[in-house]
Length: 385
Image (cartoon, rainbow, N blue to C red; front, side):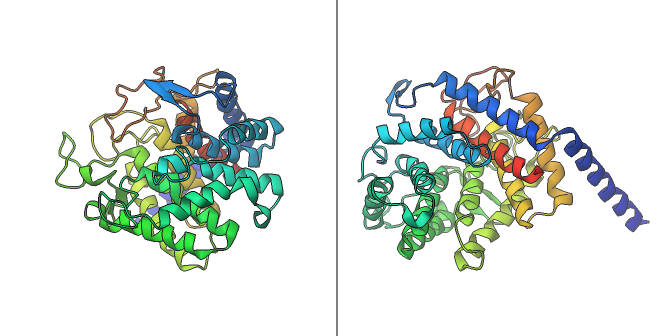
């Protein structure tokens, strides 16, 4: 009897996935991704203009840099010269330099370098030919950080004290390794990652749960108001996306790839348990506090699920229904007719930031949210293709 029940359950999941796939085509996903991106490019027509949220910030700040990660992903499935022109204008204006110069050790300043190197690859045609302006300043900056101790904790590797930094900077180190062939960049990135994972605040990754605490302020005994752990959705999304972006650049048989893959699998299992019935993930993954949809985290988890299924790491019978529900939830619940994205949490460091969220509320920064959405949409598009 149990075998029959299990077979019926699997069949039901499969039929649900097939139905969702029949309702959503890869072209549908691409149209939605274009809609969201066109909204953003029209609203922020000049990519060189600084942001002005409480204070003036150059457009090379991390929020905008994440947008360009999404735009480059869209360019790979929907090549358009206007996307490249938009990104090249931005990079040229900032002289292919990290925000705040070559002697910054702040991962938020370094995030823009990921797109600089991607643009160099697209311009030159292959990684081995990326040279000159595309990498010089970024390389000088990473070399500087690799010999600089963080005075706040006395560790050469202790710069990523918050998990967002893993996404902002770790893929850049791996890109530089890929471009130059110099393993020192990969080795340093892995040591920085392990410091955040295992040492910062006693270790920010809860292996048993497959989820990350945002920084040392949120590890136990810190609790949410309902007594649950505080696992911030977008923070976990940052790490999940970073694992994908790094593994995409590494040989699958390398020890580094295998190490990151183990954490990817643990996170996948943990995140699957946190998905809401409506398909979204909420700002606080396991707490009832702020129980509402949230788009940026949902986008990044879709990104990882879709990638993992394409690689054969995540079983489609388990993760495909979750991915389908996530996409349908965002299309129906957050994408406006003009491409604006609702239920997007503003900048911050925990579930309370930018509250209350809503379908119509405009977050303090729209750019990283669009970038996250494009990452999820493009990977889901590839899954459907």
